[in-house]
Length: 503
Image (cartoon, rainbow, N blue to C red):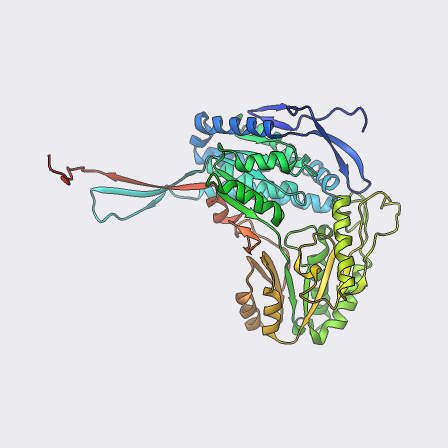
């Protein structure tokens, strides 16, 4: 994009600006690897300026003291603006992240839902929890206050959705913030900051710095002016963020990776309809957004008696998934987000085959077509059969369109396999036996467990994981609580001398 003017994508104290260094970055369309936007490339100096602006807005500005009703009204205005711009934002999300336009539209709907949910949640709360002090002469109440300055580091796979899960509750609680979107997919988050300003959010409350994690993200995690750090991304980066934040004893929320089991019992496939449903959901679990989903059902754990039939049909249908540019009609799956991500996926598949896995479908780059440019980062949906726990591809998060197949014979074995992971984000169990469904769901050590379904989430329900999938929760009342401090106010209505000391 020689000669294209870089967009001012750093927003500090109510003003859009270039990076202090004047550095820029080209944003590539993963469908053809061609640049279609140029953004500012910030560094530590931009991060410092943004935190200082957020600090001033919190300490001296009106937002923390704005009434709950007025804060909620602003969140609802933002939701309305998102609906207004749904087509434009959905297309932008598609070009930026590689997903289909329909997936992009659904993401925008979910973002609007999140803003509305947190608006309703704060309005519906009372004025605090009264604590019985045992006497009418004391009024004691527990109240909630905003944490302060929050920094948010968001991932590249669901740029706007993941940002909204942090920004909406932070604003509902009365905080100010600095958000750093992924340097690969920053555009819709930039657009959201513009909508917040249009909705009437005071200057300095919402700040954004576009730039790399190694400089901007690292500085935001360690900055002494920051009160809370929220990060969504990989385990390695999340560990570094947690360590940096720990030095300042900041509140931390980390939503990290997953290696999510999809357990299918034979009785879930007893009829043609139930069999087709389980196969279809296994495809959805593994291959939506090319598998670039933290909750992807990338581990199929299927009962041995139905394994061959199930995997054969799964592989047949996976081979028919229509790959292409997300903006094209009829395309079901887009490219991976970058060449680096595709090469990582290829390396995992190669290691699995070397360790004895059997390739049932995919496993290579597709042939170019009129909807699939040769320069795009496409990779075929891949099914790897006869996998076992010692394989790297089974243990580690691929974040690509790769499904591994393991088998079991007993319920205990199924549970043991599903829990045999250092992650614990999500999982599913498929069975026609209601008692078994409840037993297995209760034994799975994962933050979300679906029964006879995969991937739905509710704004009202907390989202987060066990183990190395992170700490803290997003969405639901717990998601709001992450952005609050709790204060106990004890009022003595009839104070008297204590007389502990002579005098």
